[in-house]
Image 1: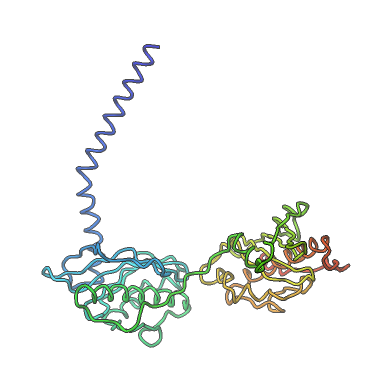
Image 2: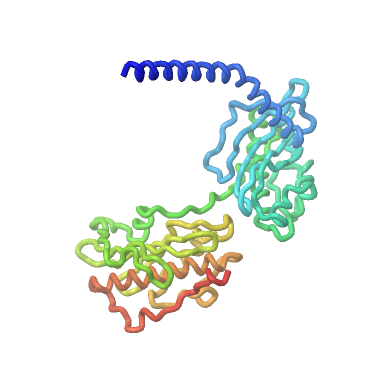
Length: 374
């Protein structure tokens, strides 16, 4: 026992010495590490702002968290100790996503752009990082919003990437220009910040439930009762996760079904609501893993809203009653199939609570099943 206690003290002593040593080493090397990082960052910023000889972080720069474009940092660009512009690091959605450095002088002229990362399609969106595209921005007057096709040439076959890069550059130059105008006498721009809409997001269940079956003023809050016989039920290669019947003030309102299927890049889960007459009240997508700006556009109301008012027994076939997203037919079909299965299961549950009876041929419907074709 004494030997074990002694060994414990020895190990504790070694651990203490190691911790102290690491702390000492960190304190000694941290300044050098930061200097190396700053040197690398300055080298990148020098590419987009050749006239500057030093760059300093703008500690008083206020980031705008409300924009879909994320500003990671802003550095003032100096020459002979005088601020002559700024370099801003901004990130946003393209076909996938990109992180960029954008230089701007006090006259609101772009001094250069550079990609720190770009994860778009090789041979298409990746061409945005080539000098043939990036060099077009050098010398552009950015007092107004830039537009592809008029201020610079877009990338053939990569419209979405072009639009995304344009959004990043426009917001970056606005943010940098606004900062320079307020703090260093830079040229004022025209108008406010460019509006870049945030990417639509999936719904959480509470929000989806509240929107599909909203509480009526002065009435009872809707009550959701799970129909457990539907839980984890396989239907035509899709999975019915759960089904709920919905009531309020002693009256049946309809039912909800959560269904999961396969989309283009992963899975899609859709919550579909029907009334007691087998009519689709609406649907909300609660999970989707797909291509940004293409398949993920299924989260936009213009797409999922088209199912509202259709009958549970109506065919939901892409291009035959369901409008597909451009470039995302498989995802469109996957959502339509999840809505169809959800509507049929929810309508069946509602019928058991006094809703419209299930037609005799209700279970003979077909789905798109385009996942196998892709």
